[in-house]
Structures are given as C-alpha cells and as structure tokens.
Length: 102
Image 1 (cartoon, rainbow, N blue to C red):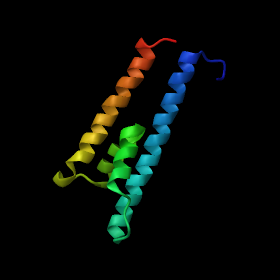
Image 2: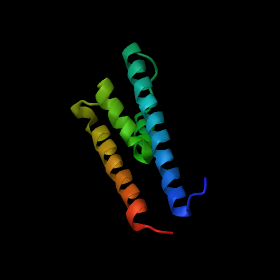
Image 3: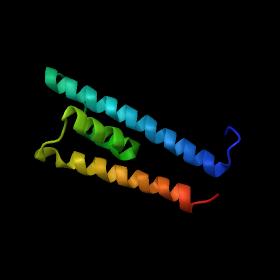
C-alpha cells in the first residue's frame, strides 16, 4: 500500500482502524447523551461497550469526560472497559511497531 512494506502497511491500517472506531464511538456516546437528555429511546449499553472495547475506547472515554456521560458510580464498568481498551490497543500498537516483524 502506497509503496510501504507489509509491516508498515499493517501498522497504518490498524492506526486508521483505531481512529475510525474512536470517531464512531465518540458519536455514539454523544448521540446517547442527547437522547438521554430528551427522554428518547437510547443506544444499548452493550453496543457502547462493544464499540469501546473493539477499538473505540479513546473516543468513548473522551466522550464520557467531555459530555459527562456514563460517569457515575453505577456505571463504573464504562470507565473500566474504556481504560482497559485504551491499554489493550496501545499495547497492540507497541507490539506491532517494535516487536512483530513480517
């Protein structure tokens, strides 16, 4: 891809995936917050958590803090999943960049 080696292409694709997933997750959290304020039908918690876990944790955590959404003690698992997701995907990126060569 664009004259890059396979190793660099994989890193680039993974980075793009994380950015796109974070953007989508940020939008989902924002939409859920707006729906909550208006008393409308909400996005399922499982959907928000899955998007956070599978690459959107940075966007999810940012939205949580920015919009004060799902930050109470009764929603502790949102903080956990988002922070765990950030650590997981940052670790995978470090592995790809420094340790896995193909």
